[in-house]
Length: 454
Image (cartoon, rainbow, N blue to C red; front, side, top):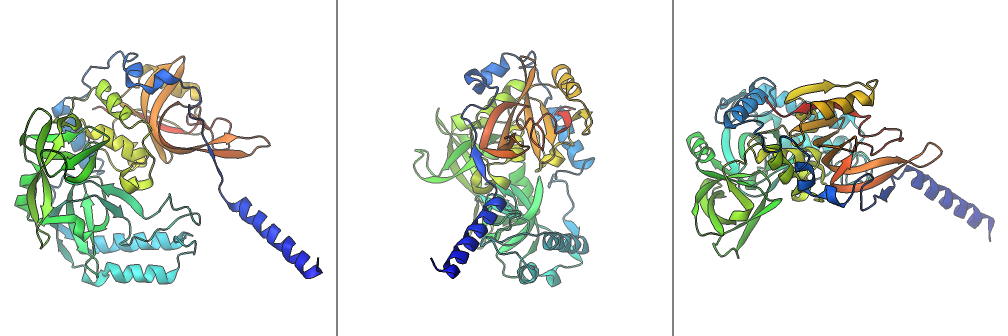
């Protein structure tokens, strides 16, 4: 072998080794999560161990007060039927500029693994059209008429912390189902995007996914009664009563006005549609009765646990991309079936409800387990970690168990090194996942425990 060829080969091998060291490697998790068994995969297992499974945690009046506190005191959700239609343009402009600056300061990569630089953000600024934001914004109203992504910048391009890691798009804030009310504050220069508030978050959505209307029409559709709430993981919507002409599906917890019962198997509902001009038009569609409940479910631990288990093994998706859910989206969907409106992200969800304990890194785990055992209500308590949130199920053999949507956990693999076990679905687990790793177990990382009650 020629000397030049030899050195070239060594260089390539070293370069490849360097790339491999930088790459985040995932290992598959076992089919059965550690410390769980077959019976634990059923809601009945946990309901049977819950002494207050059918006790109403909050009645409709209590839920109304709970949501009002989350809105008015904590400022974490929005009731658009009560908010002012006038917004300060300078506040919106300042908020949007801070968002761009925040991304610009991070080291983020586009889908082709190239660092996003000044040209990318300059184009985003042009598209936002800051010059068109008036001093006083007269908000427009509308409803989502098809599934849409809610983005933090008006673009379909992705930005990731690690090159090529498209599963975690930093620009994906949330996703919105058909029937979601929105308040529109601004429109992009190319008229393709609108910046809008939804009840639990704000961001950019595609304009063609919104049916626009005036406030009176907005409030009328919003407050139509009676209504149904979707209670299946994915509730199909059809144009015809024979359920053959498919419209879309709605995820769990979507509220739609009831148009009337059609027969013993099918109900008709009103869904928002668009005229050619993008205006709201009410259309009648059909759904299986088995997929909806007329009105909200009663807020009992039994109902929360049963709804959570309908999402067992559902795929994890950051920001609800592709119609799935992440950890906070999972929690939000489950509690929305009983009328409890929770904020979009886990940090904010960890601020609502009755506090049972706040914890620092020095808090011993026995104290946390004691609170879970004696004070937390299975099916009505949330456990928050930094960047994660879980629904508490109850105790079994001295261990606290949870159900949660999780991407992965770390596992110690000798010589002080961790491997990453990818789960990527909703699972039942105890709190030992990650035990011994550098990050610590789920139990080690609990920041707060709260009962979702008044």
